[in-house]
Length: 186
Image (tube, rainbow, N blue to C red):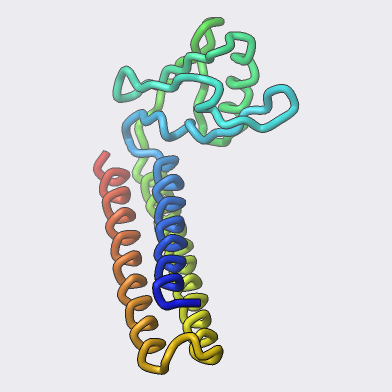
């Protein structure tokens, strides 16, 4: 495998780890109503698990309220059941056409739990990034054994991989810090 291919693969996989964390963090509550809280919630429709965003328009018309408008009014009961079963602690109010959810303010205790969850998610992302680094270094070593890279090229690739690792770990830490600040301040 050529040096550029190894680096492209490493960068692509690290991008995916960051994107996953970004998606996971969007589901963490802050003090404000945020459609991301339930966008990725899975709803049992016609025998399969379907993400909320494929079934309904989710909006936050007020800081403490979410409004869900199902594209198919026949799915409203299933959506309501999924919200109740999600364990988010929301009590949906269904008027037959739309579902309203009043998002209660967070307590200090629940904020601390959410920050703990953010730290867990961040650590998972960092571990994922480090695993990609390990795989990239192995690929570079293998390329050197296969005479596709010289020893110097291998060292350069591994240095570049380390730089990418630092960059992506920094990005992950910044994202987590911003989300923690929203949770604690919000």
